Image (cartoon, rainbow, N blue to C red):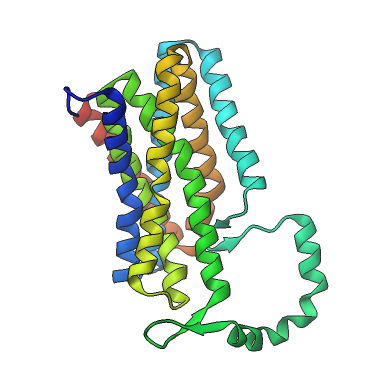
Length: 284
């Protein structure tokens, strides 16, 4: 990046660049809805990027800077953090509401009322500025999904910040990889809003704004790590644990369920190859 700027400024710029992937995905969704094969391929790419970034870059760098024990503890804490966050934070898993067991029991008790669902949906519809119907439940789905992606972007910013403090080229490498990863997330955010009748501009705006949590996470983590540099190896492994959990819990299951399985596999391979190429280009 710019050598004459303060490291925190460079980290902020890098994380802003990475966050633009969410806005780009939102733009793609409002221009043209991806098909089943395209969606599976895109989700596969982001899964391949995250897995390779964690196991080939973040965790090995953590071991190299410290030892296997620090890397193991950091990785486990990152995965555990996302597990707790995933359980307690209300969000949508890329279009599918996560329902805890007690909520599932309530749904079963109310199953006899589902025949009136179409009537209730009509009652919940409002008009947008073009006179088209707005499906409020679907809008809520899109907004909850945006909240979930915003939460996930916070720890991803930690990877950018920790990577840059370790090596500026490594930070740039992570930012470019995460930018690619964020594109399908932007698509998943904007699609439910467009289907609900929200105008293209507002759907894109929500997707774009959900990505801005990444610079916030990067800046906060960097301000902390600048003071406590001994925690840098653990932070790299922590970010790796976060990425692996998101990939296994969110990305791959969603890609296989809502996309094409063969194209998902091709996407994972393409995403992995992209990381290999970036690693060679940046020399990390």
